[in-house]
Length: 356
Picture 1 (cartoon, rainbow, N blue to C red):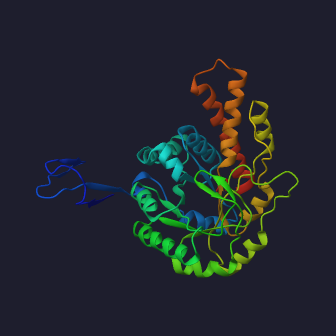
Picture 2 (picture 1 turned 180 degrees about the vertical axis):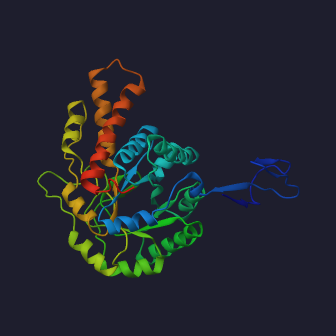
Picture 3 (picture 1 turned 45 degrees about the vertical axis):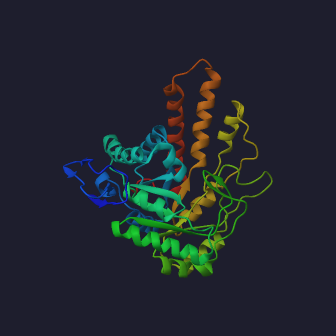
């Protein structure tokens, strides 16, 4: 389905003929531009509503894996097809700029067809991670995203509510689901950063959900963005008590955890062995994430672990074969290592295997 709109304030010359498909526009007295909105349904994607409902009932979480390039996307689809898991393909604002919004749309469509080619038509969501403005969310929806996150957590509460509600009202016109956020995660990842945690206040969640109409809510209970989550000597522990209290306030409502990489120490050691300098990198214990997935948490975001796995594989190849210059020879092993990591996450952490 194509949604068409015309902007009379563009700079296209008056005599320009615009051709899209079988549509011709020949402006006469005014300047026009043709905007095409792509429906995610035409790309074979789904929104998060149904898969979250099933995850809530089944006591598991949907993997939300970030990607920036083809090898990451291949690894994600291969892992989820082989484990029969639904998946959320996450794209941050930075990744969208890096990969190009048009290419991303076709990559997502290609991912759907690739899954079929591999033998199983798994549900695939294309999701904007940490959208920071209405305009960004709107643009992603117009380019075929089936889900968006609007992160107003850095704003005063009332402004967060107003911004989130505005995005929801627009997104729901096109059956696109929306994730909001309350509380702030410490750490750095892409363009998102904060010095310290601000835990989600259970007293606010019911009011926020009712006023905004969001479809899911990201909360802060001690997870952190990036690879440097905790220091040696600390005992990483997420605040399951806050999670359980939030469940009581909004029973049956989909909860999301960001910053949930475990930072596998064997992978960190491999990076450092082959010339890396990752010091004091400690993440969230996987047993705690599995416990959270059994509750109302139905989406868990994992990004840094994937970056670490690919980096370890690339460093190993280049260290052992310093004359190698064919990208396929080091990106191929990186893709394979990433696939195995994500299969482990799906089966042993999230519990979403055989749920597609």
